[in-house]
Image (cartoon, rainbow, N blue to C red; front, side, top):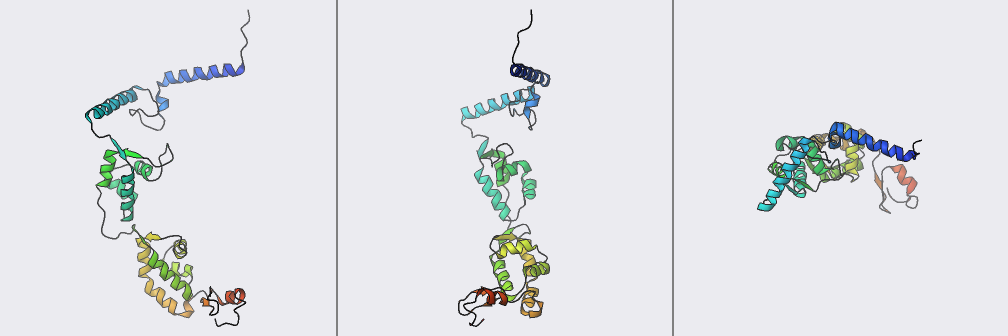
Length: 249
């Protein structure tokens, strides 16, 4: 007697199910743990270490709930604001990691996104909050501290109106031209303290260059008295201000 004929898709599903069962039995659930280490019951791993860790965790959580003790997890919002405050006071992520003992991946998950959800975490462990919140802020200015760039932007506009090119200012101060362009056009409201320090250090030289017409690499900006428009060059004024061509420039 011949065997009954079956569908190819059904045979494929049966083969895949048998393969999964054999793999699960050979690895005893170890392949389901993913990126996490064993002994933490993550992503449904059913090995002995993960099952024992899950049993201990559930017993501890039940005991805490019965005795009215606080949970191990707290809101991550205050921790996130504390990290932003430390960043504003001059701390870098590496310094926060070294002083608090919290891993870089944990800080990244709090500030940027968690690797599993793709967004910042809503809760974190209580010991993580205590370790980060115990860091005291600095009172002295450090090179990595973010400071306001309003004063710097005002002087950049003055030098631009005097005829100095942004590239020339960047070469004189040893700064990145893209940073100066962003500050000049209002795209960046804060800079590092080392950037402001370099600008203040070379400011006397920039003042002398602005007072010397021969040091200017661009033509001085002009203002039309009739319409009040400011043009970067005299050629632009003659080209785009035709109706005020007779006015004083």
